[in-house]
Image 1 (cartoon, rainbow, N blue to C red):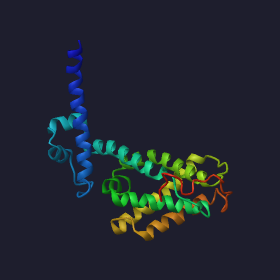
Image 2: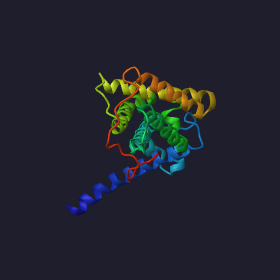
Image 3: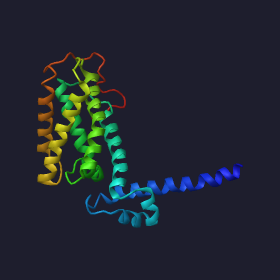
Image 4: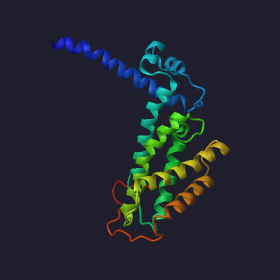
Length: 220
């Protein structure tokens, strides 16, 4: 029986390896290729996975991109959620630091930039980003709350989600005009996001005494 179980688990293990190889290969290819240029056959050939197997695991390149998108968004979320080094004069500085951190992350990961920011992404992929961005909005709220006493905000998830989308729109416009997120558009993203959140938050919030200024493990 044990031998039979091992035999049954082997194909599943092999399938998981091939799926991961296809996803990782697509990510690597997006460092030098445009999102709209790749096909699932291209990825399968580079990954040395039989094309028939690739189309068994994923319906098409969009399906593969959808799985990769979830991985990339989780990495962005983890990067933004890492503790921030303070102190900060105001919550708007926290927002600006988070946006700067996001821009650095995208600059270092062309695959994330293309799938999460590039307007060339399909409507279905954009919808996938929107769904994930709800979690990013909560990260923004938590980071502000780590340094300042964040007041109750009616429909807080929706408010911070929209704030994240405003920053994302500025990133997208920069991508359209320059093919990358420029420093100028990063500043515009901060201004626009702060202006929107300013409709719900006072300019000055009480600072938390236990704010993690220079705490162990904190990042800029």
